[in-house]
Image (cartoon, rainbow, N blue to C red; front, side):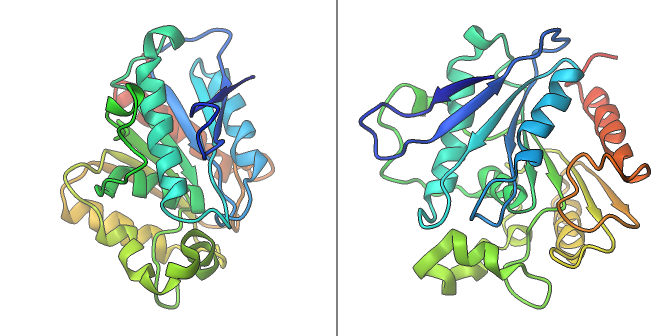
Length: 257
């Protein structure tokens, strides 16, 4: 693992990217991983754990340690945009294809992945160097039991409290199912039917929005597992999600046949 600093040393954001390079790469596609943790902490098994899995199937992986509470929106989104731009800017150096950068987000990290795909507003912190001239939109997104809904009985409100801080009352503008647009990339999504922390209504609402906007997607709902299961090593039926994902990556040209 190699740690990369995304911004110049005198920049106010100290965000870092942990690079995990596969010893035996089979593709130039790469994954940018956004761990979950309710915008309050980062879950290692959804970061390094995922990176090691992607390395094992021949993909380079990068884990973003994005800004967390009390560093609120738009800082996490700025970090995610910068990470995609950074990978594209250094694509030749990292031996990756800039047109094949897949964002992988779990729980609140899944919500951040959707903001990366869907939010179009510009911020004063952007556009200050050559890296920021790169496009920040991911080529595809993989969402693992994502936080989507920002209001109502199925919303994980703590995620929005940590993300928005004093702007918490604006959370209705951060419902990802309402933000799907023509820039939303093809999507792989899975969730657990008995998840009581982030209920499957989040995933179902997002899948419905993707369908309404004609965005290609694949969605899997597993019977049991709860929340935050990551690679699900102790759940034989659920851990098949990585096999399903690998097939999806192959069918969409990110992995060789």
